[in-house]
Each structure stands twice: as C-alpha cells, then as structure tokens.
Image (tube, rainbow, N blue to C red):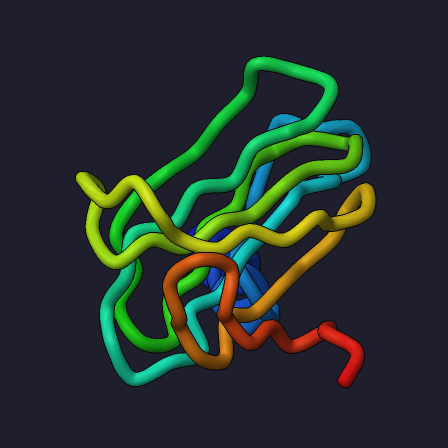
Length: 112
C-alpha cells in the first residue's frame, strides 16, 4: 500500500506545470510570470463569473479551472488600476515576458 502511494506521489510531482482540478478534462486558463519581478495577476473566464487572482513571483503560475476562453492580466500591485491584459483561447496558457503599464506588456504568444 505504501509503495502505491509513493508511486502516485512521484508521478504527480514529476508532472509538468501546475496541477488543476475541477474543469472538464482538466481544462484551465493559466498565466505564468516569466519576468524577474513580482506582479499581481488575474485570470478570468469570459463566459462566467469565475476569477482567480494573486501576486506571482518570478516563474510562478496562476490557473483558473475553466473550459472556455478567458482573459489574463498583470498589474504592478493589487491596488493598481492600470495594467495589461491578453485574451487567451480555451485551455490557453500565457506568459508575461515584460511588464509595462497601459497595455505595453510583452507576452509569450504575442506576434511581433
């Protein structure tokens, strides 16, 4: 019994990315802070009232279990009114590469 628990734990810990439960098929909207600074992030579904938010340090990820399209956003602080946002497709993942106020952020999937 203990061996089975350890084996399952090893698989879970080796899984890439965050583990998110609750959405059909594990679908989730996610944002990753790929900068060297901490920022406040939000993730929300377009077609629902679902929302996740929090301060992310460098390399951290925030996910919202949600199967539809959504919006991820980054702000300097939780109290900031201006930040930048990005539409993400269903099951989408986005990474903030550089922060700039007034929608002047660099995102990983942004077309140059």
